[in-house]
Image (cartoon, rainbow, N blue to C red; front, side, top):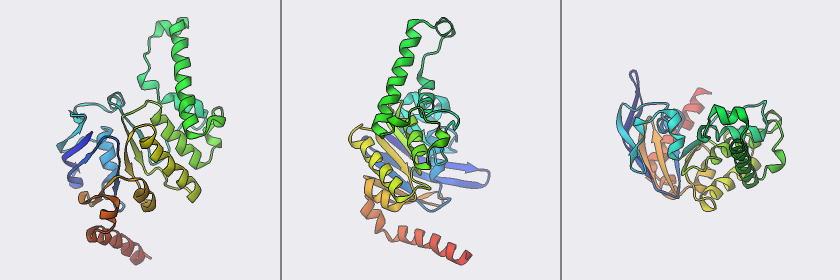
Length: 258
């Protein structure tokens, strides 16, 4: 479904991603892991078209994404949640979910100004979609609650829900359990599995929580300093000496700093 072919991303003299290739099959949960600064979020920013690679191609269903602008990517069937929750805190859960549909809604000033039946139908359909997503997330009772009143775990669910509402083929999850307690982490891990098993989404995941990665992933790519250093099943990468060395190096650096 998604194929990275020899992607390199450079910022001045810094190479953030170096000749990276991998393939995400349809219907799988595919994780990208690595120490801080490995280039993982840069990968997502290339898919979202915030960054343009220096070389290589990014194919989605056989079509190169590099020719598209960021606002066009959602129409290709790709949605994303962010590492730092990007919600409208003064708006309700319902209102935040509806903003996810904004790029897909047909907008014409005259029907809207005249409040024609077609506009009312579109609004009802949008709200129905939002309730379906809230039902899947078990947060229907929070529909009219301001996001600012929610715990971080529930805010993260709303952020993921906003990506889900467009019914994408591929959903990008950037550190979905960062900053969560064990109970919240378990809820999100169950949700990620449901995205694949019940809704048929393909999931591309960046995450530092290795227990979650090992639990939900079908395949894993490991990055370090912009390069792919390992690829395989969770068990294979977990036991790869190169991966162990990369993570031990990160731990040793932190210990030395103390």
